[in-house]
Image 1 (cartoon, helix red, strand yellow):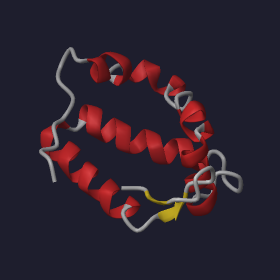
Image 2 (cartoon, rainbow, N blue to C red):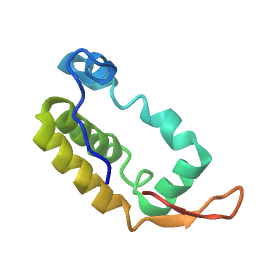
Image 3 (cartoon, rainbow, N blue to C red):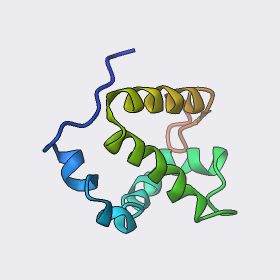
Image 4 (cartoon, rainbow, N blue to C red):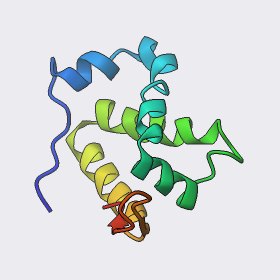
Length: 103
């Protein structure tokens, strides 16, 4: 696994998500992410977005906050946790029918 690095002070991630006042806007980037056909298929196969639409943004926001504000150790632990959660997720590209993995 490549080295995991916490966002740099003054870097783009910190500028976008470093101010807690931006928290209400954080779910907005999820819409384009989920509208990508491959990502959307993965969410449909492995997620509960339709049944619990409010839970998905929270499950994204909490790790994002941990990585941005938690420091190097927290960022590394959270990245490893996310890799473990996503590794078993397998599927098929809806356009090409090729097998896919979330990680």
